[in-house]
Image (cartoon, rainbow, N blue to C red; front, side, top):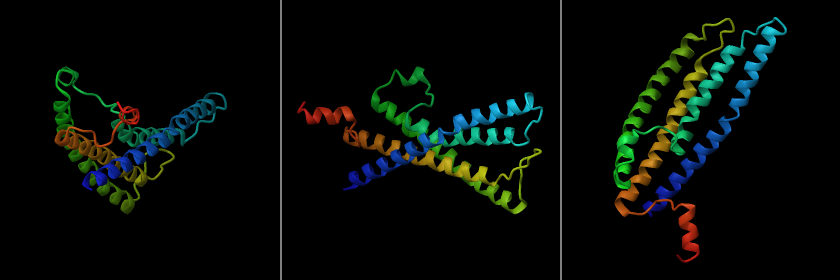
Length: 185
């Protein structure tokens, strides 16, 4: 029963993070378009925009922050390989639990600070210090969402690691294991 709940939680988190990670990737060509438009406008039309730099900065920030959970899901973050590759799979899981705990603590701090900054941005109408001067409140919302997604993904990874350490089995079988079971191996 509890394992079923954990599987549902982990699968839901995996789906959500994957959906957002893939969706946010549309910002990469948008950044390229905005920068290319600015170059064209500035050097060919001799009419630079006041918004292109800020917009590309926001798009890059959204891409990096919201892509963090997807990078965690794909295990694309760095490890200290000199230690990591020389230990057993169970010790690696313990490393994941320790680093995950620290990351969740750090993400919780980011959420709290971003929430405070969001309140200030709304109260005092904070704007980016540029000629265009776009409002900044959306940036703090995005940081709260990104940190929350990272916490969800790390918690999902931690549940899988704890389950494996306790039972010796994967919480969510991989496709290879499913194929082996189907063929009776």
